[in-house]
Image (cartoon, rainbow, N blue to C red; front, side):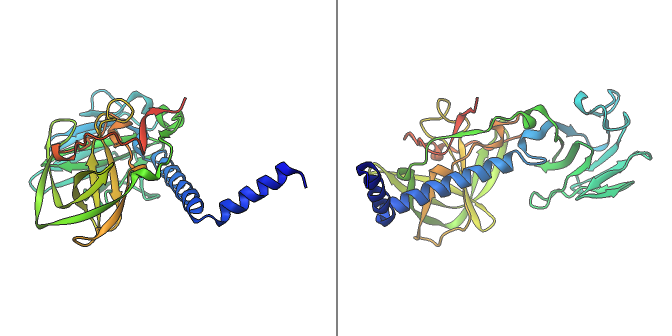
Length: 302
């Protein structure tokens, strides 16, 4: 057998029988699969890349359509979707409701089913619904007593020509073991968003971890059964998004338990892709002085 072929076989056998090499290969494969799934969701229907408008709604009746005489004039790229007046949205801030009334000659879809006339918008963040007409979709969001109409164009140039995300190469150094420390009483974490608005989020505890023998901690936001971290590190504004990045933990650990905090799965907030979103900024205690060269970067593929 040729010496080169023999050496390749021996190398492959050694790689397969070396648990550390196998674990590293599995880590890289799983990280890249997660990144690919993240990008697929980002490019999906009604995703952040499709947003073309975020319009404040006034109390009472808000007429909407592509015509300039509407209270909410939809972007010009959507002028072919229907008549200049599509209908109206009525806001009742006291009741915390928003209802849609379509013009007589307009039909829209919700979850694939056509409807006409009137319907209420679902405003709960977990079950918030989209209604659509052709390439256009929209829903209403309510925050701190204010109501906004968010509009998506599923044929937007940003979506159809999006080149893809870029990532640091997977690095197991940034898959750190963290300890979860629950607060004796859940506290309220005050977070500002990019518009300067103050948001109150439930903070149940913090993650404590070490990098190069230096101890760090991040306050966690309770999100369902899991945890949500908003953080910024020393790469922000240079190699990573200046407003910070996010990390999700599916299941909240028990107080004192350790868990894996994987910065390779740190991802950019919606504001990195769309000006029609309002993203939370990291609180001061979640701004880290260390350079975390892992996860999603600021650049885009050429």
